[in-house]
Amino acid sequence: MGPTIILLFSGKRKSGKDYLTDKLKGLLSDKCQILKISEPIKSHWAKMKNLNLDDLLSDKEYKEQYRLEMINWSDEMREKDYGCFCRTACQNAPIKPIWIVSDIRRKTDIQWFKENYGDRIKAIRIIADDETRRKRGFEYKEGIDNVTSECDLDDYTTWDLVVDNGRNGKPLEEQLNQILELIKL
Ligand SMILES: Nc1ncnc2c1ncn2[C@@H]1O[C@H](COP(=O)(O)OP(=O)(O)O)[C@@H](O)[C@H]1O
Ligand SMILES: C[C@@](O)(CCOP(=O)(O)OP(=O)(O)O)CC(=O)O
Image (cartoon, rainbow, N blue to C red; front, side):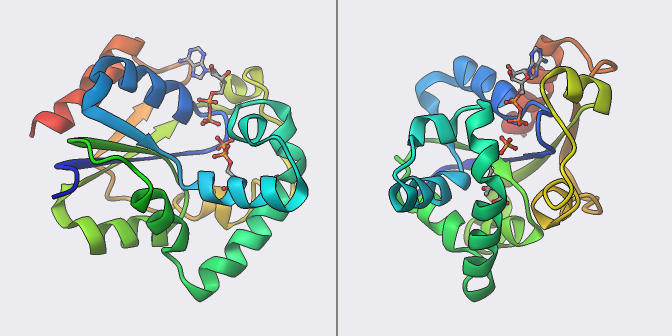
């Protein structure tokens, strides 16, 4: 059976993917499950390097030390099987009416979900101005912020919804209601 709708969230570092999806989870409660494509990547890295997985999964600075090597390793894996991390994230997920995937980063992520879940998916882009991102702790890094991991969806145009979570954004409640409207369609 699987979920009836899958919300795919994409956005640059510190745009607010985890923030908004956590708030959404608070509204949808046990009708939804948050999935992270980065979870299997970070689990592998935590095991390989004996790292703290909870800290890797948090928004702490800790994960930034390992981001580049996780990007490079995971890109090598995707070369062989572009949906490997999407598949792992989904196969471990409990079946709920709504899945929220909080960290879509590549066109191949969207491609895999379209191939496997068809018209049940809704793609949502979260944007935030650089000043706001910087206030949230973002620092531009060459080799991180100018590569596929952060840029592959910059030219993707067929979003079901774009949410501005920056200084020009609507109040949080309005942002969340826009997303909930997608679920009703
Ligand atoms: N609208 C907002 N209001 C207040 N704090 C926010 C908002 N959006 C994001 N944040 C905070 O900014 C930081 C980065 O947000 P996060 O969701 O972790 O970004 P991302 O997952 O896109 O990297 C977090 O500390 C989060 O709590
Ligand atoms: C190797 C990664 O999966 C690490 C992703 O870590 P997070 O999902 O924690 O990133 P942000 O929340 O945007 O800061 C990125 C990738 O290219 O797959």
